[in-house]
Length: 143
Image 1 (cartoon, rainbow, N blue to C red):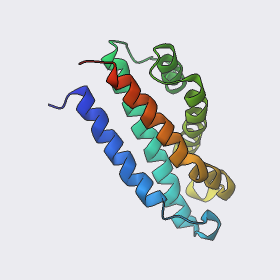
Image 2: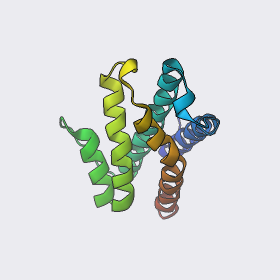
Image 3: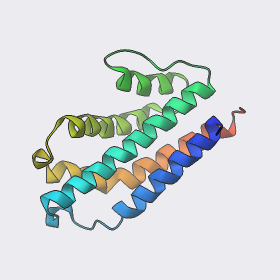
């Protein structure tokens, strides 16, 4: 069975693979609706991976995952309180979390090119900051 640290590494590797694919997208405005839905799925996958890493990080701190109708938001806020991520990163991830929520509840034809462009333009920078902060957190932590 994989340790929490190994699970985090697996998630990071999966996210890196998705980001490598997203790097091939030059201009979302030229994509068909079906291709746009694929890009949206990848953005959704990135946030799911980030959220899994945050959950594993909370477990490393012996903290429980919040249980409520707002647990996704509560998880982000809890990771700030436990100094897993910074408040600045929390704000950046909140935008991706909001998109993930929309994506789950929307139909593919409702996707907005400009919203996806905004996210694809910054996803690599946001993830780099996330990766840096998680690695820093893990460096000071033993399983």
